Picture 1 (spheres, one colour):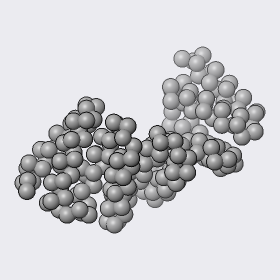
Picture 2 (picture 1 turned 30 degrees about the vertical axis):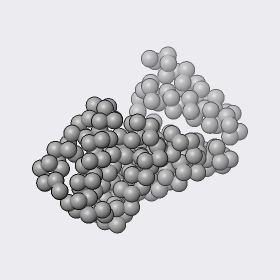
Picture 3 (picture 1 turned 90 degrees about the horizontal axis):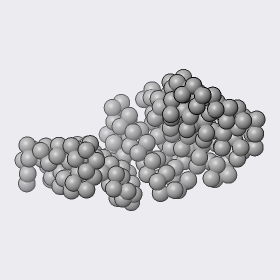
Picture 4 (picture 1 turned 135 degrees about the vertical axis):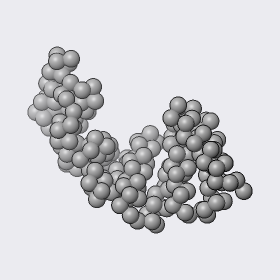
Length: 209
C-alpha cells in the first residue's frame, strides 16, 4: 500500500499533466492515484471523488467518452451519498461535465437529462445565473430541438440570453456565437422575426468589433 505522501505525489502529477493538456500521462497517473486512494479510504469514500473526477476529465480530453462518463457518474453517486452544500455544488459541476460528454456523444436525451439535473443543482447552490448555467440552457435548448420540442427549446434559449446579455458585452466572441445559435434555433422553431432580430445583433456586433 502506498503511503499518503506517495499518493499525494501521484495525484498531483496527474493534475499537473491534466492542466498542461498531457491527457495520456494524466490518465495514467490519475488511474494509479485512484487505485491507491481506494486502498487508503475504501471504494465509496468522498475522498475518491478527487482523483475520480480528474481521471474523468483526462479521459474527456482524450475523447474517450465511455470511461469518462462512467467515472463522472460514479463520482456523482458518491457525492450524492454525502450531501452537504459543498458536495451539492460539486455534484452540479460534475453534471455540467456529463452534459458536455453527452453533447460529444450526440445523445439529445442524455444531454437533456444531465443538463436539467445540472441546472437544478446549480439553482439549489445559487449558481444558476452563471455563464455555466447559461451554457446548460443552450445545451438543453439544442437537445429539445432534436427531440422536437420547440417551445421548450425557446424557453431555455430565452433564459440563456437573459444571463448572457447581463454578463457579456455585445461584441464578445462568445456572445456573437450565441446570437448566431439563437437565430438558427428561432428559425427552426417557426419564429422568423425573432431569428431576424438576432441576425441583426450579429451584424452590429461585427461592426463594433
